[in-house]
Image 1 (spheres, rainbow over the protein chains, first blue to last red):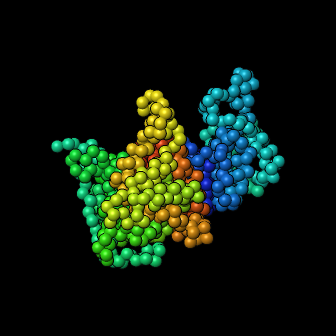
Image 2 (cartoon, rainbow over the protein chains, first blue to last red):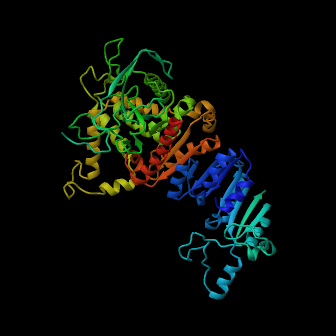
Length: 196
Length: 385
């Protein structure tokens, strides 16, 4: 399992109700349902991913998250997960609000655009960063909002969102002691646990 | 001898099963005895755990797959999905398909003889509901020795039966497959049904439903009903793509004869239907649709109605279906999520409107097949234990 999903997995209580927005092939949910008896649902838009979820036996709902989550009742989930998808949403702020409405707690992961490699790429090459992790070029990337840990945390302050937990890792989703020295420069991916 | 396609179930023979246990209907009326006409495809395994029930839609019947004889031109109505290697794989499943009570293809209905009078039931045949059908299908399961279906599967009105099954007999199915359906009819749906009923009942040949004795058939009414219905089965884009504004003779004829291709097509469809379907059955089927509302007994709360269900669900809709639009399927899905039940939902891109559920659209067959495959794998894994 992808390392960030392992971290998320450990944050989820057994037997709870979980919805994974942009669940991909459903590996997190498959694990949570089988090992933690979680009542889990995934929202996905990609056909191949949906088929993969069906094969795994994961409850998957075909839906464009950008169209909103208004049909889901407030506070109907214990945890709402969005892993590596917030930067692809048309309005990340509205999605975060919606996540906080339907769930008691949310877990969000996203790439940090202020990582030193991205900074240097833009500063010295004068071009939008392309890396192993963000492997698209500017015209075909699904990542339409680039933001940093600081940006996200400012949004949380503005909207009275409480950050319960934050873990910053490198592109392999591994903890490194030195990341803690200057997370917004050295960390590539952040995993936030937020609530209101 | 003609060769049928390799993925066809080949020649099938319907069987008639008689039930002499009285069936009390939702209306309070009782059918003392009745017949159901049934087709089956594939083999029931020893544990009787691989059985699939197919529920038909408004104009459907028991003949879902295969051919009735060597020279049969057309296979059953859902042959695209049922057969060896198809989404409902008859190499792995035992498939049961019946003509519902009140139907006109052999099961007890308005056009069969009332044993009490020796005359056709006609308009005296009781109004049957989706719940009544499910009760009769459960008796069919008993008769066939099937305690629990691997899945109950249906499109449109058939999907409504599948949903009702999961509520009425929670422990008698493991999966519920609901395609292009709705949790209840919209006002607009009921309005269209009423137009169809008026067309039939106002036909002078209808004779208040006693047309059998008069040796007449309300053909015009039935044809109009079907034409209206058919428009709701197609999408606007699909119609435009298929017929456009094409003229049969290439130029305007300045009279009231059918000139546009769509006019001819609808007339042809209506005409064909009016000679193969029974008007009283059509009335009954539209009423069963109108009355369907499983949440009604639960404070109009569908999630509450689904509280005790035990099966897993597969729900599918089609983007251009405006008869039972994707929003309607999502109502079912939302209620299932609220009730904490396992559900998979897919929305298929298709130009064909409501009719899409009968068409082997590649993506549709892929997801549907993947889900059915999962069911078959679980059945076979259980048996290997």
